[in-house]
Length: 170
Image (cartoon, rainbow, N blue to C red; front, side, top):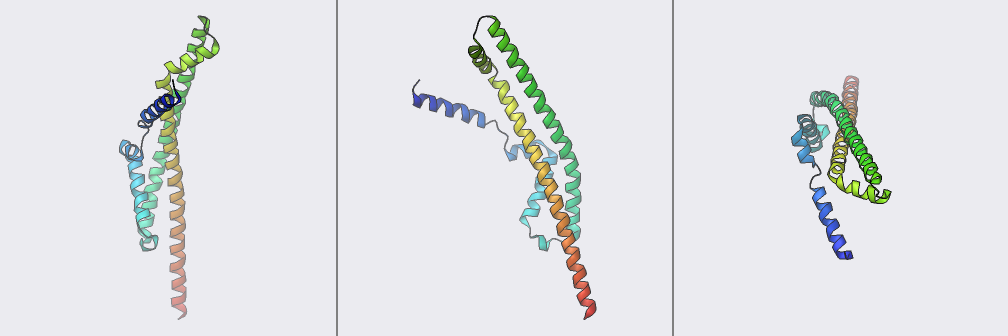
């Protein structure tokens, strides 16, 4: 194969694999908890926090807190699923390599042939890792958003009490 042919084949393989990566829209459509978290975070992002009343910040924070617990459990499940896919892949790969070397193949040849046979399984490991990472990122973003809302509520309380103090002195 020429260098151009190899590069073209590489691009075709990568493009086909990239199509299977779960986008944010697909992820959001696949899980109601994720959809709810993203909806709340988008609402916060679209609005000026100074204009959002304190009771609304508390409502959003409470909702995110409940969703955070669900996301944590889902993230743990996704991590376990990824580990299962990875262990199964490793077991199959090692078994195939042993089988091929027992029939006279060299280790390098056996390893390459086995990896080629398990290309689809390896892609499943990659995809499950991507899902696990997406859930973990959302768990982190939700946690940070809750902390941010707590700070915003404290600031609003401080501003209200300072306004009250100044109003009393006048």
